[in-house]
Length: 287
Image (cartoon, rainbow, N blue to C red; front, side, top):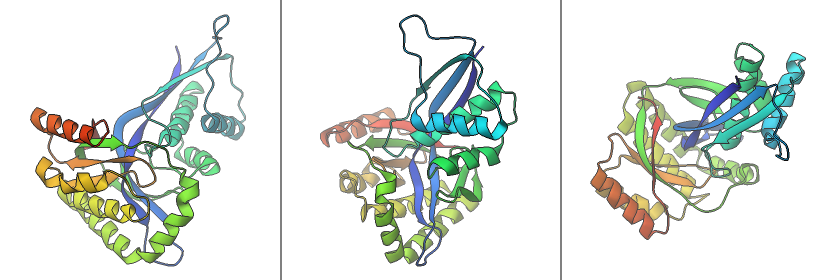
């Protein structure tokens, strides 16, 4: 019987920007969880069949496994890793963080240990800036400090239609540009975040969607999406409450507080195809 670990990814963020205006901003995110996952398995006592290459963890997941074993003073038993992910790499869907968390959850189960959030955060801090996919709820999270500022619960959910534009984004490479932008537009970001948190506090998904749209518009000034103007122009026509993006990625889409009917989905798919892309649909958040 294999041990397993599963972690959801994101559709980017409902907010990414400074926690508060100032000359040295911390990058704060409210990640947008999606029902797409990274799955990692370890089957003790097995080896790859003759002539077949054994499955190897990705570099970051392998580093996470090494740090976990060093922390607990453990050694891996004989066996084989395997896995599957629904999350494209490098587009802003938290694929690498989800791989790391899924690997750690698999190891906790393999060694019959309680899932320790402090250990998970310590491993993540040693590897990369992260999203809050280690939580099963929304959160305001400092991605570089690996600190949860505020938990925002599971009361908000959206239906989404989204595009994954071509290419990838190197988060580390664009961080200095982002920080300059946050310093210039700190007050706008601060108001946007305050409105977003009010929406969560009142359980108002439409208010959250409006604030997410402001965050997306601010992001467009520094890391633009080619389809942004077209999607924004037809938002009301399609009945969407807002626009969201992967702020350091390639994902952009609509937020719906209701499930779009089949005719709307067809019209959306046709419009996105006219822009040269494929339209995808997924449920984001909770609620």
